[in-house]
Length: 190
Image 1 (cartoon, rainbow, N blue to C red):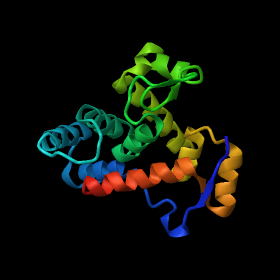
Image 2: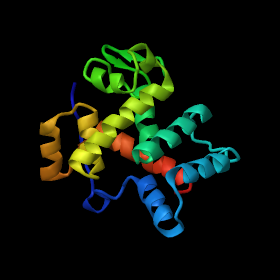
Image 3: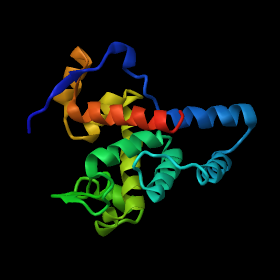
């Protein structure tokens, strides 16, 4: 596999953050709202809004709910799913399954933690949840640097991370996911 590199402008590095966490934490701080209350209110509002973004409505609800649970911007989850599977939940590529292409061998313990099996990874909700759990762990361990998180999520490895840190170069995967995530945020009015 040949990796193509793209420079990420310094002014954009770290700009695409986990927006939903900030929104929820500010809501709790200023309004005393709890996350479930905000999520329930968001679901009621979302039911009346229809976006022309190509994301199946059922999955959008999953991305919103799981994104809130793990404090990850739903648009980031959506853009990964688009890139990995084009929203087809039953896609298999060797050991990688489902919307988010979860590696069932590498993440068997993570799946077991939630009571999921390999077959469950071909269903949207469990697949997104396991992927979000991985992403949340990466964010916790490596901070809010989206390109680093996506390089690690995609399996590009530490050499790719070092190239990014030294030169600001990112892979096509990272460029595509971040670009689509920003576009989804624009469409969703964020």
